Image (cartoon, rainbow, N blue to C red; front, side, top):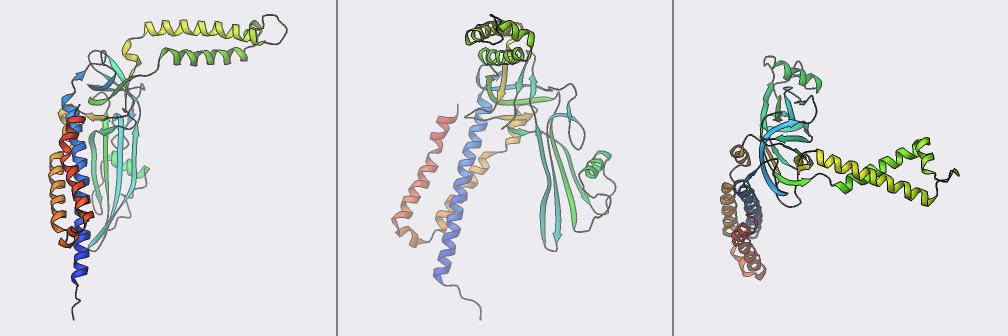
Length: 341
């Protein structure tokens, strides 16, 4: 005799599905609003030049220049780059089922310079949303011919058995992305001063005083009365001279260096930090289309409300929850007005 499902069990399952649809729809909806605000920021912010960039949220375009004389090479293709990300996934088929295990997921990001026709600024990429060009997308399966030489070398160095050990139900996927050195790069982040004169002067004073204490000749000069002990008054006088010397050095250094050498672009406390290969249009394409997510979120919310059992709406808590959901949906235009800057 087939199992019977009571109306109570069916109602409970429907309610669970409705709650899942509502939560998923709200998540998609608000995430899509965030993505939309990011697109508005990218489209609405004018492009600044490296030499004249103002402090605060800024958009820049230029070429990515590595700091080191010999740029870093991407792990698989060995291409000069300033950022790289490689992922290796092992797939195992079990009849109708399959499993995927990430064997390697390695990202390397380090500071680099962004240079345009007016100058250059340093970029600190920690915390950035980075989208580079895809250098490698390889699937290694049993019975295939030898992969490219650089891919085979990468596999040998990371223990991926492309030579032997392949079974019909196992294959590997290798993906690699990079920001190429000296290539066009788009940047949206916070422009800020790297350090100020006071910070550098303090650091210089500390270094000079440590050096003085290690040098017997200079330490003897600080002992003005030559009694073998540096008194507090003697130390204060020596420290004052060192501070004056350090300040003069820093002011001379500040005057000799171009203004943009003191500017960095970093992750803002509030806002977006985006680094992408190519121009603004390429960066926008990498962000995807949030309008589709917004439509999907609204559809999931409507489906959740429709699936909710009628008995649920007899509860005041259900109406309160519905009002919260409705307020969240209607708050979208307000968020747009506030965060579109």
